[in-house]
Image (cartoon, rainbow, N blue to C red; front, side):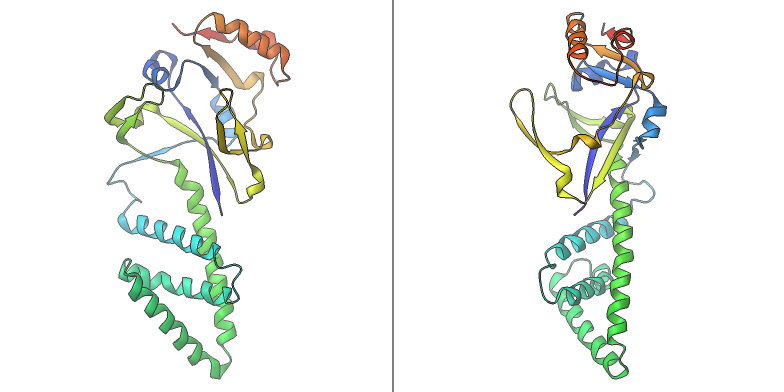
Length: 259
């Protein structure tokens, strides 16, 4: 099963980010856009109820393909695996016509499958039919995974928003003001995912292993924003005691304290 892992950035100038700091914290790394583009970090696409490409038919298709592959995930140890895959593909057309009438869909799929196989057997084309449908299913899978990669880069233009720090909820906030960029790394391998423990002892699930980290060097870093002057000494000690890609002197020259 495909999993998408996100890291979020914003394209906000320092003198415009007071609200952002209030919600997300007073520390920040400012990195070049060239670094972002090199690492496939992209601006999100802000959408509203009437945006092109987000018609109800598209939403129905996305929901259906997600359900299609989730159900197939449970087939794999069953003897009639290929037959169920074929029925799932046949379901596409019926489901889009009937819009979720599950009982009727299942009845029609089974009947259609039996009729097609019986018609093709006398001409020895039933095997060809199975192979063709399975290849068609593979094309559907490729399209599905392509759409899955793009979906994390969609965000509502405006919606109710809760600040992570304060817990305050703002009704109908214009999210477009954050000018968000995102990194999305996709994996199909459970071995890529680890459980981490934060500094305060809270166990967090669903992080990628370190080899997937976004790496930056001195020339990629524009500045480091800190909450107060005392934090500068802590940063210096951290750089001194840990092996990083950064030169201590160059990095400390880029430190700025929030006003």
